[in-house]
Amino acid sequence: MVTNNFEYFAPESFDEAAQLLAKYRDTAKILAGGQSLLPIMKLRLAAPEVLIDLSHVPELSEISSNGDGLTIGSMATYYELSQSAVVQKAAPAIAEAAGQVADVQVRNRGTIGGSLSHSDPAGDMPAVFLALNGAAVARTRRGTREIASDRFFVDLLTTALRPTEIMTQIKIPVATGKTGSAYSKFENKASHYAIAGVAAQVTLGSDGTVTAARVAVTGVSSKSTRAKRTERILIGKEPTASVIRRASDRAAAELQDDLTEDIHASGEYRSYLATVIAERAITAAVERAR
Amino acid sequence: MPNEITVTVNGTEYTDTVEARQLLSDYLRETLGLTGTHLGCDTSSCGACTVLVDGQSAKSCTLLAVQANGHSVTTIEGLATDGELHPVQAAFREEHGLQCGFCTPGMMISVAQLLDRNPNPTETEIREGIGGNLCRCTGYHNIVKAAQTAARSI
Image 1 (cartoon, rainbow over the protein chains, first blue to last red):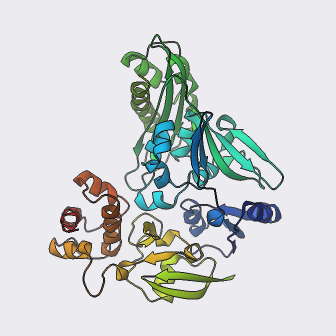
Image 2 (cartoon, one colour):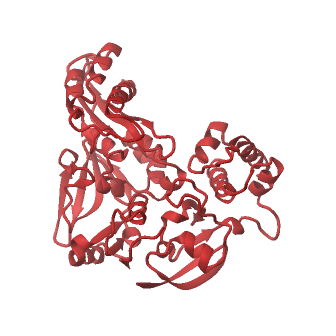
Image 3 (cartoon, each protein chain N blue to C red):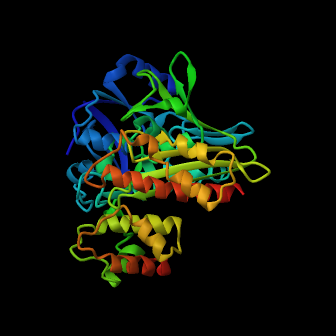
C-alpha cells in the first residue's frame, strides 16, 4: 500500500516549519513519528498534500523539570519517556503509559506530541495528559499559547490546535504533597490499543483523605474524557478499597451516550472494563501517594 | 515529487532520488534489492519489515524513505559480519527458532534490539521484546529459546 502523492518538507528550524504550515495550512499535516499518520495515509483515510517533518527541528525532544513542573518536548518518543529518570520521578504515570504503547518498534518512533495531536480515541497518552492536568504549548510564527488538557480534546480525532499551530511542548504541573499517579489498560492483543484505559492522579492530605483526584478514561468513547463522578466520590474520603470500588463503578457513567462499539468489544463491555481498570489505576495511584 | 536522499544501509552509503511517498520497506527491497526485509501485513502490525534505524528498531512499512535521509539503516543482510553469523542468527539456527521463516528477519532484528538494551532478559521481557512481531506458524516457543541462547552467547 502506498499513500496518495504529497510534497515533503524537512525544515531545520521551528520558524521554517511554522512558515510552511502558515503557507499550506489545512492541506498540510505535521509529521512527527508517523506511527499514527502514515498508517491512515496508507489506508487513504487521510490524504494531505504536504507533509512537514519535524524530526530535523532541534530542541523539540528535550525533557526537563524544575520547581514548576515537567516540560516534555513534543517530539520526545515513547521509548525516551519510558526510560527518562526525570519523567519517572516527576510523573511516573507518563513513563508507565509510554512503556505500554503499542510495541517496541512503535515506541522507538512514536511521540507524545503526535499522540496528543492525533487524539486517537484509544490512545494512551491523552488519558494521562488529562489526569496529570497537563497543558500543550501551541506555537505559531507570531506567538505561543498554552492549551489546558481539559480544553484540548474536542471530538473524535479533533483537538483545539488551530491549523497554523504546532505543538512544541507538553507541560505537567509539579505534583504537590502526597501525590501518586498511575496508568492501567486492558489492551487489544494484536494492536495493543486500549480497549479501556484509565489514568489516575490522587493527592492525599495529612489525615489520609483524598484532597484532589483526576481520573481519565480512554478507549471507551470518541475521545479521552475525565471521569468526574469518580473524582467527586474520591475527594474528601479516605481511599479505602470500598471507596475506590464505589468510585470506579462510575468511571464510564458520563460516557453512556458515546460508547465505542466495534468488533473488539461492545459498548457495554467497554463500559464495564473501564470500572475494573479504574479500580486498578486508582489503587496504584493511592499506593504511590502514601 | 522527487526527493534526493542519502542513506547508509548496512555500512554502505547510497544516494537515490525517491518519491516522497516511497516507503522505506519498498526502497530497501525494490531500489536496493535487499529482499531480506519482508513485507507482511503492510499495516504496522506484524513486524516482518523490522529494521534498525540508527540502532533503534522500526517497522520499515511505516517509515518513509525520506525519513531515513541522513540516517543509518541495518537490515537482516547487515547483521552478520565477515561471513560470521550474528549471535542472534546462530541461536535461531541452533534452537530452530523458525518454521516457515517469513517472520524471521524481523524477529531477529527485534531480538538483537532487545539484547542490545537488555543483555539478560527474563522470558517475560523476551516475549514483550518481540511483542511487535507476529509468527503465524506460532513458533514462539523456539524463538524465545533462541533469544535466551543468544543472550548467553553474547
